[in-house]
Image 1 (cartoon, helix red, strand yellow):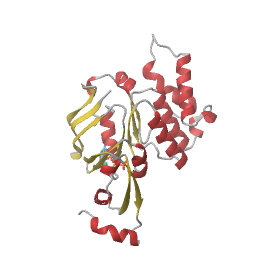
Image 2 (cartoon, rainbow, N blue to C red; image 1 turned 90 degrees about the vertical axis):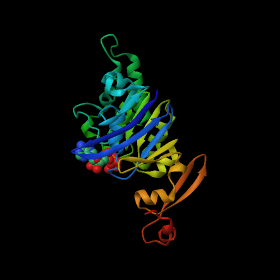
Image 3 (tube, rainbow, N blue to C red; image 1 turned 135 degrees about the horizontal axis):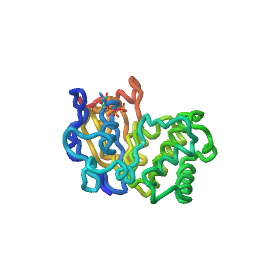
Image 4 (cartoon, rainbow, N blue to C red; image 1 turned 30 degrees about the vertical axis):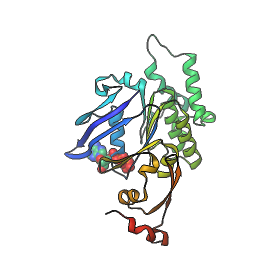
Length: 267
Ligand SMILES: Nc1ncnc2c1ncn2[C@@H]1O[C@H](COP(=O)(O)OP(=O)(O)OP(=O)(O)O)[C@@H](O)[C@H]1O
């Protein structure tokens, strides 16, 4: 299933937020979206999820305009985990994950043992089995975030959209979550702040700046020291590791390492 943004622009209050963004999410890939705060990652994710309509351009799901499809139809194909996702507080952890099955249920498809199994597997996948009976409001931020991911997995989408999914997670669960996403038989798009995580787990990376995609390709192609300096204003050394992978070492401002590569800075 192919998800595409074709020349999409979006603005609000007379301010242009996204300008002429085009992107084909290739079936089966893990695409990372990186960029500074306010560069438009969340805005692009909500257009890709069909939550917002572009002011111009189109978002296509398998060649069909996403805004012409019903919400239920979209929800059977695409799951979105939002940055500040909230869930009603008077439910248990397991019930929060069960909500992921909603698009698949109906008068002719009532809740079944299979739904129970899918929900159980999603909870196990995010390492939340011991807390499945707990009330939502008693859970920590990281535990809630893992359950949001479990709900999206229980939705069994073909395309998983994750807006900063590793927020609130400790490093073990950050790595575990990205590994888990990578292992799924699905297409995934994740807005990420950690460039090394994007470089480790993503097949391709789209780098955003000022509401535009300024680079798109393998981690090694996109995350050059020059580009990171020009977009984020941070001096780095990039170690290229083959197969499009790379590792980024950040240099503290004022340190000898930060002074040395300054010549590469793009103004
Ligand atoms: N509803 C809105 N009204 C006004 N401005 C908005 C609205 N939504 C987004 N923006 C602005 O659009 C820009 C892009 O926001 P967006 O949330 O897409 O960025 P982001 O790259 O996801 O940022 P971050 O890394 O901080 O999460 C920001 O300057 C933001 O303030």
